[in-house]
Image (cartoon, rainbow, N blue to C red; front, side, top):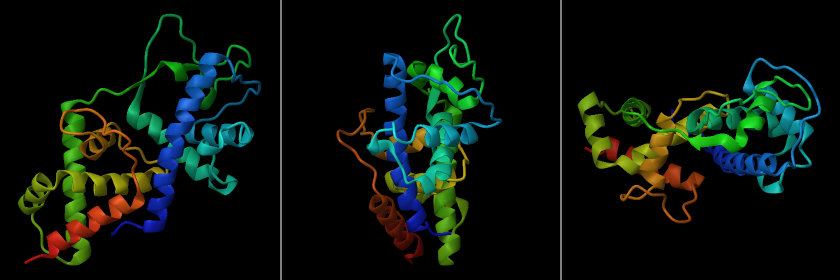
Amino acid sequence: MFLDQQKLALAVEMQAKSYTLLRWVGESVSSGLLSFQTAHTYSTLPLAAADWIDKHYLNIPEAARVARTDIPAFANFFSTYLENSFDLIESPGRIRFSPDAHCFCPMCSWMIDAPNLKTKSLSAGDKKRALRMQIHSILQIGIDTGAMLDESRAEAIVSDNGEATALVAYGHDLIQRLDAIANGPAVLALWRRFAWNASGSPKPKFRLSTQMIISAESDLRALVTAR
């Protein structure tokens, strides 16, 4: 199915806001600006995140704030951002709750560890899964356009169009994350295909846009249907 531009635009916005919120949380916990006074329990991180964001809505910086009606989707997305891109740095004596509020919910437990987050290390398996996501995005375009693509043709297109296919695969993943579906560190591997340069470092001032993804899909659609 071709990318839904409305959902994609929302997901791209939430990707940027999630990162801004993530950085604010880490800085605020480190400086002691955040504290947790309400004890509660939740079975999942998205549910805990939704409640936490709602309660702290006016304290969250405007650049990291969404409309209240979008909080459930934002909480879903925010939770997958953590699962896909970060690990907790283990430290002796680390506790998984707020010592002041005695809260064991996933959100407050994560908040205590926020300053100890580090970017996940990518394995060969993560990179292989990212490649499969790129191939799948091409096969899906083939299905949507009625083109008859076999696996070898899809692999060849990915090989010659790594950045574009990574963008489209990442776009599909962004939309899934609105429903709290996380594909793990493979998504980070996709990100580095288009947001990093050939030397292996982030592109200066790179900013993902909806149009960037839609344009890549359009170019690939033309390539797939070309005879």
